[in-house]
Length: 212
Image (cartoon, rainbow, N blue to C red; front, side, top):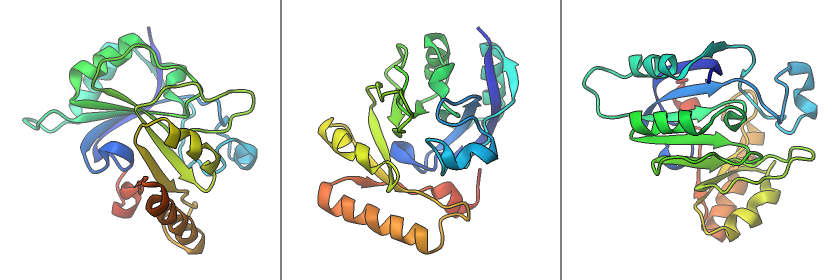
């Protein structure tokens, strides 16, 4: 089936979560159920801190997606990872796409808000849930790891801790980037949670490095 793709880019580094710092390429699908992507509606959405453009894009089949991803990997480089993101990628991603990505890459991170069940996937395709409080849409996914944005999604922390899966806490980043008093306050809260609960700290390292 065709997929609506916002962009495909790389090489870069995964900036967040379990594979932070690892070389990868990105596949960003369009569409989201937590925000319609319009600037004028962002503040009232379930993701008022979203920094991503996921509207528009091209309709591509799997063969084209695989070819475009492969074109970003340097010749002779070891097998890269792939980050499948959005918007909300599980609005579109199906078992066929996940099987293809799992075949082509050493690891795959699906970055999801958790409101959609993940289709069957290879063992190297990992679900990383950054849960969002979307009205009338419960978090139903069973992730391999949690990434809780602090303080905005801290209400999900008890559930994540009770799951027995790795839990990353990440400071919500203001529009100006990882700087300023608000960011430092969020970071301090994350450190406190890490010390108290044994969580792992996730920073948006791509923003510190100035890479996409």
